[in-house]
Length: 295
Image (cartoon, rainbow, N blue to C red):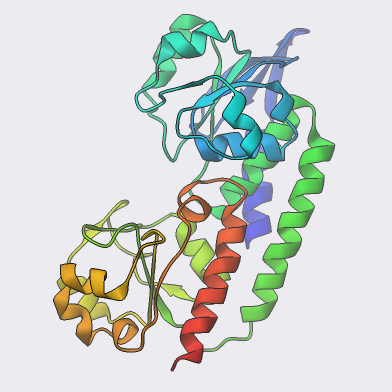
């Protein structure tokens, strides 16, 4: 299913035409036809996950600026940085990029009009699903002319995904998993989020995949009624179960809490729609297995 979705997405993102020898038209994740130079030497990125995608596709040496939230790979720490939420257009323009890469997950689509007025092409990478992220790596490789590097990187990711799928494909009963961003306010993920793909790859079943809200804030009542087998969140290294119960004392009735199956995971491996979400899925798989061993 994942690879079929990748093929379909890449077909939609192929260059639509070349209007002359110096430019081409390519469709991005917002379904916009973007006029790009054939040769791209200077890249600015607007989100950490986007930067990691460009690096995976072989474009590290061409990045001239990143958002002030970027910290990976370490080489980007030496690059000029700027606010991206909202965008500091003056700082980005000063770097004279040939292209700005953004993401549909984080960046505001209204920024398009400003970049267009500045004469800078901005290309939005799709990021709702795991298939989107994989397709984005391949698409950036096509745009930069580094398809061989992108393909090699993708082969490694696909092998790791296949290994996870093999571990769990014969599992009849999957533990229910609640993924949270923080311990106090219960921010989670609604439909069409790659987080659900990661949980499925890891052998679990996401409890918020079918909610009608894209970025839900859950209630204690929801958690009590759904009774998750496992709770995983980006709670930070200092997380303790006692701290969680300070905010949600009724959760002593939740199976995940009763059986000490509440875990924290590194935020950057989950919250950034980039290639490291595969590593995030591997960590989730380990945590879910750990939770099952405590039954």
